[in-house]
Every structure is written in C-alpha cells, then in structure tokens.
Length: 155
Picture 1 (cartoon, rainbow, N blue to C red):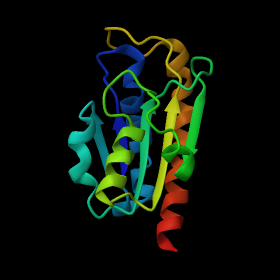
Picture 2: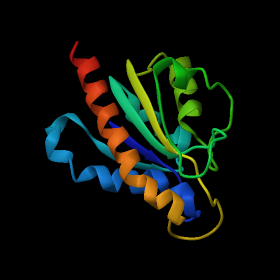
Picture 3: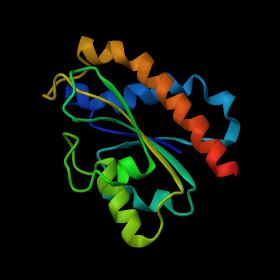
C-alpha cells in the first residue's frame, strides 16, 4: 500500500498527496499489487486499513532538520526508532501509526517513508516552489521503495 498523509490546505503539508498523484501514473507497473490511499490527516483512524498488510510506503512532509525541499527515505527500523518525535504538522504521523500497529501486533513486515522537508506550513493551497521542485525526486524514491517492499514481501 502507498499511503499519503498530510493536509493539502496547509501548503507544504500536502506534499504527500502531490507525491501520490505523481506516482499513480506508474500504477500499471505494479498491477493490483499496490493500493494507492490518500489518508489525509486521519492518523490513527487509519489503523483498520493496515489489517493483514505486508507492506506500506508512507508519503508525507517531514521535519527532520534538513533544508526545505530535501527528500528523505527511511525504512524499517529507522522509521520505528523515530519514537515519539514529532515529524509532521498534522496529527497521526507515520511513526505514530506504526507505534499503534506495534501495540496491536499488526506491523507490516516491510515499511518505508518517503518525506520532503517542508518550507511553508501555513494555511494555503499549493506547495511552495522549493517543495514542488522536489516532487519528481521524491516520486523516484517512492518507486524505489515500492519495488523494495514488493521484493521483500515476495521472499
């Protein structure tokens, strides 16, 4: 599953949805093996869609202390080790969701997060130019993450 998180009404916090839209053009590459989901800001309300999932790639705007527009790919234990650290402007970040899934004993075997450092998190529709320029790079990282997770699930 490819899961976009974020709020497109808060400028760069909508980066996850923009990445999702950019990647959907490659959907035929994976056939029915990848589901595209816009989770918005639902956070923990999304837990039900993880039941029985073997793999998930999160797409989101993330604050990891890098320059605006920087693209990050975090996988497996890196993502789980983020603990309670707030990385997003919205409730229900990927680490929050993964912690809840761990408590429920339903963590997917293959997990990854593709994130873009935001420039502007404020009321407004549309990404900053800095983040918009990073979407193709992030989409490439996401394709790579999807292919890795699919390979991991197949083993």
